[in-house]
Image (cartoon, rainbow, N blue to C red; front, side, top):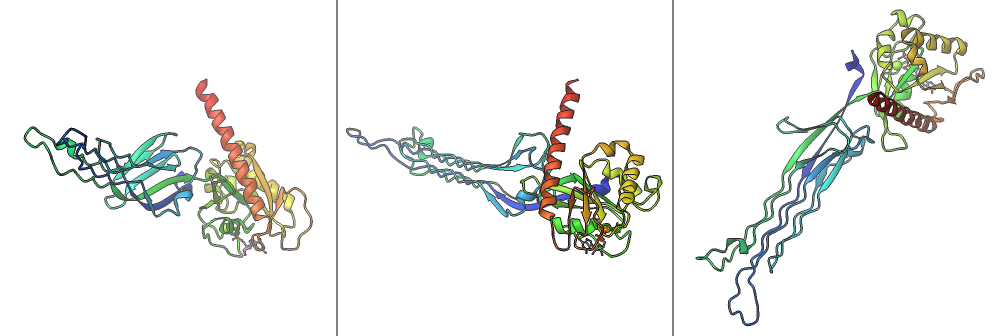
Length: 336
Ligand SMILES: Nc1nc2c(ncn2[C@@H]2O[C@H](COP(=O)(O)OP(=O)(O)OP(=O)(O)O)[C@@H](O)[C@H]2O)c(=O)[nH]1
Ligand SMILES: [Mg+2]
């Protein structure tokens, strides 16, 4: 059942580890030593492409614009047995829960869960051996060295399962789907009649902070929803898992108090814990005429984009605060 509200964030790009540096062909040149032996050093290793889990990230948004991630090549070996420098590793940070697939084979290359964990996804090529390495009693002056090996290269597919952070709650026609469509890339159906939305839709909202959050548009709730009336009921259980509720009441609603009571009543009847969730009361369609109300935290219009940035900022802050609080509670629980 929860699957319906699960949303899969996906992105693809190519990773290319660095090539190993070539080994050097070199001979000692010293005064009074007529024929110096070989002294060519090894090439350095190519840089790896490494993935690191960062629990501060919530989506794959930051990676969406990358097409190729490549690490540095290893340095050349040189005379006096000097090794080339290793290429710099390239580190990509991903949120916990990221699955990394090889796009060509479909094979799972990594399943990244714990914060701080690092995995080498593409290994840098080994540096070539310098000619010093090839010296033998019968071959005192090898005039060759190894080239560096190529780094690994893969086309990757990353997937992350997301659960909604913010649930939009409102009567049918309140403007939930319209709001989702202006703050995210999601394209829910929008129409001037109730029950347009039949199944929940999710979208990723790019907020002011780099984390972003996931917003769920659920079918409108009506009185009796908690007992199974209308369409909202079966989806109320998804709202149970969101961090923040965003309650929408439209400006043209002639009985906004009654609507708000209905919505809160349905949430409570379904699960009283929902009333303890942080919530933001938003009056929608502020571009339309309506009686002044006063119980809203914010007035918005999706059509004129009034206060949309403010709404996103506020919700981002609320999601972050709630996430911190939940993390703290989990911590206390695990210490008990
Ligand atoms: N004037 C105005 N109309 C809006 C605004 N937001 C939404 N609407 C209109 O209100 C109607 C309902 O919008 P939806 O976004 O489909 O409403 P919903 O809450 O998703 O409705 P259901 O899915 O049926 O529960 C549509 O005709 C929208 O164009 C707004 O800010 N201003
Ligand atoms: Mg809708």
